[in-house]
Amino acid sequence: MNEPWGISGPAFAWLYGVCALLPVVLAVAHERWLRRDTGARAVPGLYPLAALADGADRVTDTAVAGLLERNFLRPDGRGLLHPIRPVPADPFERAVVSLVPGNGIDLRELRSRMARHEAVRELRADLERRGLLVPETRRRRGWQYAIAAYVAVFALGIARLANAIPLKRPAGALVVLVIVVAGAIGLVVWRQRPDRTGRATAAGGLALHYGDWDRGLGRTTAGQVALHGLRAFPDQVVAATLTKTGGTKAGVFARTASTCGGGASYAVGSSCGGGASSCGGGSSCGGGGGGGCGG
Image 1 (cartoon, rainbow, N blue to C red):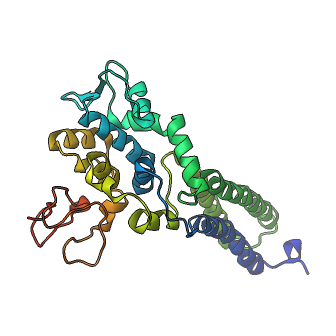
Image 2: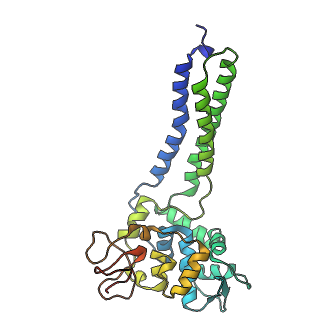
Image 3: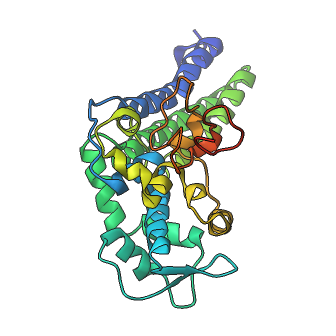
C-alpha cells in the first residue's frame, strides 16, 4: 500500500467530511437541548415578563415606558431621553435613570448600557435558574468546544494536503472540504459571541403565553410595552420617535400575529370587544381594520 497514512484519498475525504460536519451538529444539538421545555411556567413579575418577550432590550423599554408615563424621563425632538428628578424607587427604573446623562441619551445606547447593568444581569441569572432563559455561559461553551474541534480538523486537513500534494495525489475534494472547515470556524466563532439580551427556552415561551402570571399587568402601560414593545406606548409620537432611535425589533408577541375575537391564537394582554388596549403585532379584533380592539 502506497496510500498516504495508509488510507486512500476518497476514503479520507469521506471521513474528513464527517469530521467537518460533526462539531456544528453537536453544538446545534446542545443549544437545542438548552432550549428544551423544563416544565417551568411561573413568571415572577413585570420585568421577567418583558425579558421573556424580547430580552434585555424589552426590559429597558418597559422601564422607560413607566418613567415616561410618570414624567421621570422627558424625550426631546431628536428622540434623546433626559432625566427628571426625583429618582424612582423601582430598581429597573432607577437603573435607567442612573444611566441617562444630563445631556440625554438615545434608546439604542441606553439599551446597550442596561444590558450590562447589574439589575438586568441578576434578572437574567434568576430566569436562567428557573429554566425560562437559556443559560448563556453553557450555550457559549458548546460553541467554544466546536471551535476547538474545528481548529483540530482544519490542522488535520492541512497536514493531509501537505503530505498528498508532493506525492501528486488528487486533492481537489480535500481542498474544498478544508475551505468549508475554515468557513465553519467563522460560523461557530460568530455563534459563540455573548448574547446580552437573552433567549427564552421552550418553557419560557410557554410560560409567556400560557403560564402563571398576573394578567392585570397586560392592561397597564408598562405591561403593554413589556408584551408588545414600544409601539404599544399610548403616545404614538413618542413611541414612533423612540422606536426609530432604538432600532426596535418585533418581539415574541408581535411575531405571533394573533387574531382577537375569532382567531385560533391567544393574545396575552390584548383586549377585544370594548377594551382600550391595543393588540400587539398588527393583530385585528372583531374583524375591524388596523390594530385597535373592540372597534
